[in-house]
Image 1 (cartoon, rainbow, N blue to C red):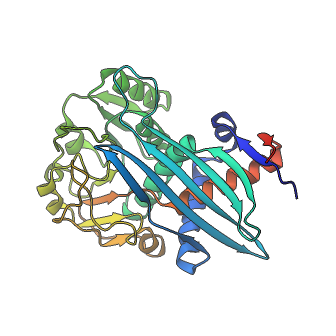
Image 2: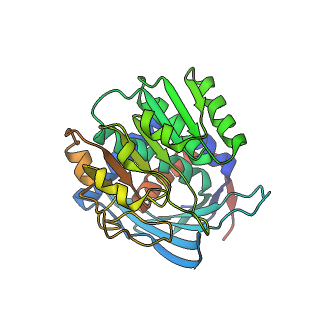
Length: 323
């Protein structure tokens, strides 16, 4: 076995990530492997520097049997983007080790994996929480995460016909609307977040943490059976409005049971009743407004990083670095 370290750049990773449906299947399998005890991970460890500014560590391991398996750790920085900066506000890198020898196998850019795994987690939750064929997808925030969620949900739901975009950046709203049109979906840009809530079957909120952010989304005005996907952990949602949700789920009850407010504190007035392990085993069929908030689980990063690593070996991608 080579002692070299395989390095995979962002461009390499983008070429090696499988289809959206394959990503959902891989994450569903990771959830089952966690339930069986073959996959283990620790809740995200966060070191906070300032509001919206933190560094995070996410370790996981998978025993595939027959002396094979992987251990991974993702190191993440979350830093509010400065005005006129071209930098992303989230940066990450993933290290892959052989589970049984401990040997480091690969180091890969994690930014694209974070994008696709987050959207895949949202889609996996929707697949098991929403009973029916949604037609309208609404976005509160239209940045990179919104764009990847559009791709993931378009792949999941052939029934989608209409995309509603709200953003404080007119340019990002126009870009997301154009992406929807390119998928043969009707797009609409609105300056009213209330309109998004009232007319969407699925609402995806991706509002970044920022000093002075005031919650402005009220679940009380959502459609009766609509689903809110809170990529922003709930910080953009009015705390009192959580009482309108009949069902609240998260990615892992071991990691988080409560959504978060605009100050990064747990909301004491709302609590998740189920997580992905519960939902994958028994999809939710009951009526009522639903919410899914999540921090992102290390098991999902492991599942995708392992696929990317294996695809890289098969396709001979990446650069070998001496150790």
